Image (tube, rainbow over all chains, first blue to last red):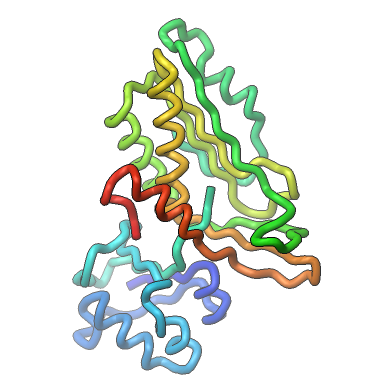
Length: 83
Length: 154
């Protein structure tokens, strides 16, 4: 799974993208977020308030918990501020 | 038509190109967003826009398709820039063309409201002290998008 981070999430995690193998430990977006929180202080902080984190799977906003596959592209980013 | 680009654009040239050779268009509305030198009462000295290549184009195309379904549009154009921009430069252009003005006005308004809450762009500003900060979303933008339907991204 390809994981992308944008805007302040990228700044705080000091990472733009990474690759994670699919795992039974994180088969969907809810469990992936729980797993992210357990990775260390920076991750715990970034994922502490999910009101300000948007999630897209394969470049589409998700609606509710979403199942994940090995080839998925998962993006985490703050509310958008373009225009 | 959707364009996501680093380069600056010329509003007049874009509008002329969109309507060139057309005699069925009776009304053209354009909106241009510019880089301001202030935000929330603080001075802004530098500006940059990040985006999510791929998803940006998909979201803009969806928004444009929705506008065409809701209003009678002969043509439309969305240009959104990314990267570093100077104060006063254009960021975004929305052009809508219709046989009558009301559809063009409403569609342009809708395109901007939905774009601001759905298209994956993030503004970064530099303050007077040289520090950079990510711009926060505005409740007024969320409210503006909601008036078009419950389908808008929260």
